[in-house]
Image (cartoon, rainbow, N blue to C red):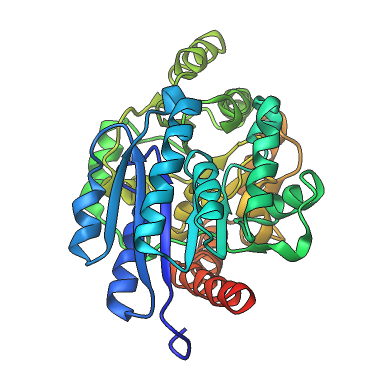
Length: 382
């Protein structure tokens, strides 16, 4: 974008007080100087990222927002967001999550910001779990001048289900810096193996996800019951928190799998790359997933991935050389995918998957994709 004028992009983000990829965006923008960012953060308490953002020389404003009172919070956020947009006059407003995107698109429309785009990260959530709010997804798309899908699934859903013109929908895969996931910390890895009792276990099959229905833990429990018949020393790591955990714990107990399943509890974020290294297989069982950061992290760590056909994984894995895509969302199908992988050369699959992820899911590629989207939008609407 250096051949063009330096745009001002105002990002909006809700319900998080620290977002890794926004930090990566700030670092790159501060280093390259070819784009100026400002931020509106919707959060119930003063967000941790506020001072971090300002330390890079970018404006950041906090708007108090409680997602437990979502409707009222979004209504109150609109005039405040409008006021900040009128004050800072960005060239582009970029929404990221539904709770910030809806008020941001409304405010930007009335502030006459010509370029209004958002990253479509929630895909079919409202369609599956809250259909009465689908009209608000359509309103977002109507008010936006550009919609950025994070996977082919998301793009197809947006165009076919919500009838958004294909010309209005772009796609930029999420990306992550590869360094943490391509560097081995043997000491941390060994401590995690000891902590979770993984010595003499094979295969170690891990999942990093919240305990919520659409992440598919119930399928994994069913799959575990099949896999342990062939691998009596198999161990499953369930890494996450969430409201469905008691239900999953009961399923594990009722299935007699207590000795094979470890509920890891909290793992420090800086230890997660080493956590992946304890795994022989990463199992991604989501019913739907707009993109899925975790499978990209696992792939960069060299762990072979077995996944349902969802999100960015299905976009890039086209044969069993780089990973295994399971077409049916069921425990039996997932188990068959894992067993098929283990009969091959899982180390070679992990190595090939790592090379693929470094090419397709790097932060450099994500950054370049958004810079191109910003410039195209300015050229079209500026």
